[in-house]
Image (cartoon, rainbow over all chains, first blue to last red):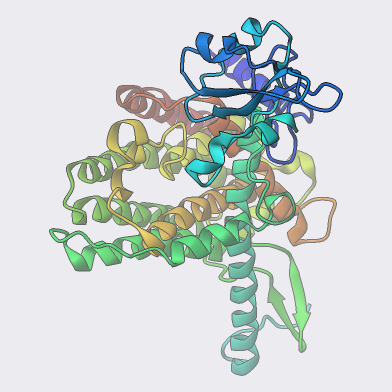
Length: 131
Length: 337
């Protein structure tokens, strides 16, 4: 019995030694997100605007129906999205939009601090997604 | 050595010196109590691979002050069905015995003040050990009163448990001390310190190792400290006797718990480790010994789960009490022959 008591005490004493704490002091220290982490979306820019060709595959595949796309044509007759919005309150971060995209115009970043004060702030427009 | 300072030869100086000693000891104990909570949270945190408080001030050092302020500004609730007088009295009943026990602990040798000898001890009672046991016994009234006055079945259970635990462990604690003053032949704590003054080998921890272990464990049970904290068992009694307490009254219970820890550390250091004897000047040795015991108590809390009620009673009556008696018999035999 005494042996077990000492064993227990030695375990806690071992943990007391510096360098054994597993806590990350979150707001001060942040862990690096994994490469495959699915965080905030990002629209990939091409030369002068986004790569997206407004093919509607992403809003079609989206299970949460959170993507709004409206197509338009520029002066060269190239299709581009006039509106591209993602409602982050509905998004489930499944990554299907990234898989569906034929031109790799959308990707997911490691950004996960998405809390905000107003509902409107969760609506990510094209400009915000291009950043 | 000049004459001992007393009320008859210089009353004004005597009162001044007395007040100074009381104030100094009180402040030191209050500070230890405040920072024991911090140390406990830090050490237990580290032992559980957490960090403990870090945000309040550098390294979280202002945490005890923040906690105190928070509790001070909380609403003070007295339940409608509670017995008001006893409810208010209980926290004081538990805190006062905890603090006044420290009065008989010597924290140094003699100093000369204004041509008189002044002992570094608040009161050198010739019944010092009896006084400690009496105050330890008084402390339980606070818990029983708190449990009863709250008019809450969990609190009452906590109070009743506390009384039962006290009776079982007070006996073993008292009996384990008996073997110490069989060797020192005095009940005065100053006398006991002087009996151990010869050097480290004269400390009673070496001649009375069994009594030392028994006293530390049973004192732990007497002050309701883990692993013997059944009166306030959070999981079964929703913190027992202090369920209904809030605000500063709750803080008083907490202060009493830590003050009790300081007191039993000081008493153990005095009885078994030669009190203020050691390599450093005077009181620092005693403080270091107190800190050592406090650390051990925190360490024990971080390691061991609470004992069951039947285990508690079994240990008290069937292990510690017979061992304490056996220790007395052996000590008596050695002293006589």
